[in-house]
Image (tube, rainbow, N blue to C red; front, side, top):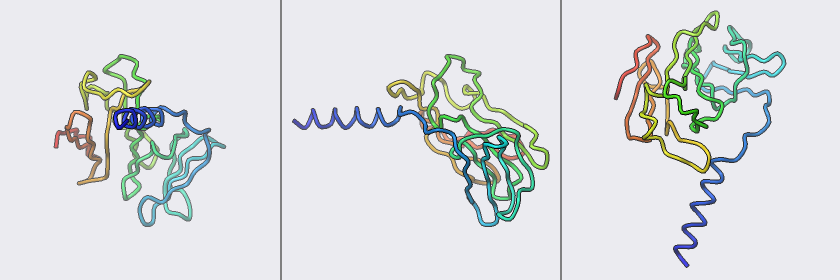
Length: 163
């Protein structure tokens, strides 16, 4: 009986991990005091700046959970639209992080999957792979943890290092 309950719970959690994403929508967040980020569908852009008005923008839309601004609003890290899951193509050089800088929204760095984790170490869900388990702003950059237990740091001066 307990074994059946645990199996049902495991299958439910796996199914939730692979549920379809909701339809695209316009969104706004204020991740840090004095900073607002809006993902607009019309036009498709991401606006970054103080709550009273954008200072700069990116010329595309992304889901809210895929947009990670720096506290000063000068940098925005974009992760895949699928969050921590990848429908992995089999290409270890697949880009999983994009870094953009104000004022023009120039892409200044990308990180391939193999830069963070050996694809063989990713955790499998029903139909995807978990490539990252957490990320946060830390020490002038973003800190990442991967399913293989490694910690990484991508700084705004474009250094990727193990933590």
